Length: 170
Image 1: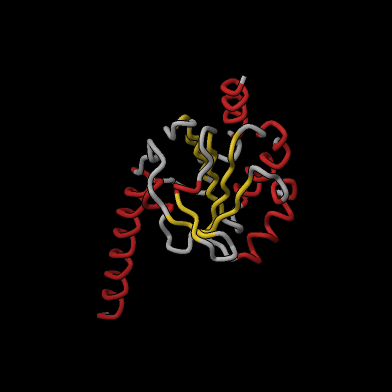
Image 2: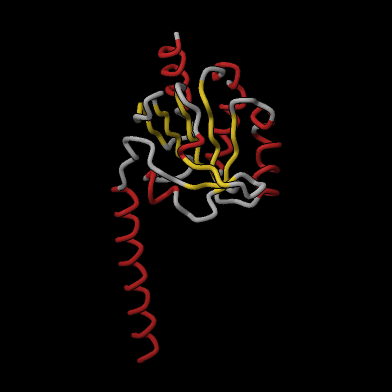
């Protein structure tokens, strides 16, 4: 009988912690300006906010290779990369290089050779804390003066970003 009560108590604690954690995750607000950060290229070279393009809009996409919704977002961006010539795109992942490149070869082949796309790895798990995404995929569009223009984390909304990119580059 004690074992059942102990297991039930553990279950209640786990449920409470999950509820608290998910409440905090949903309460996060996206960074209103681009914060200071250190990410890494896959050759282990540090990449900071000082390395970002100057005078261009900046699109960050935070993705996970196991995420179905990320597949849709990356595929949609891949199909519309021609509309993004005038912006800088930074694809960020926590995943290892082989997994990230396999994912991008499948869903974002055009992105791999695009001059305005940089692929970065978040080896220190900073992105979630400093940018404030709610879930995968998270897409942030910042203006040339590094202020948030649009944030979304739904895989079917990349079209909203494209309209804003086209409208504001004319």
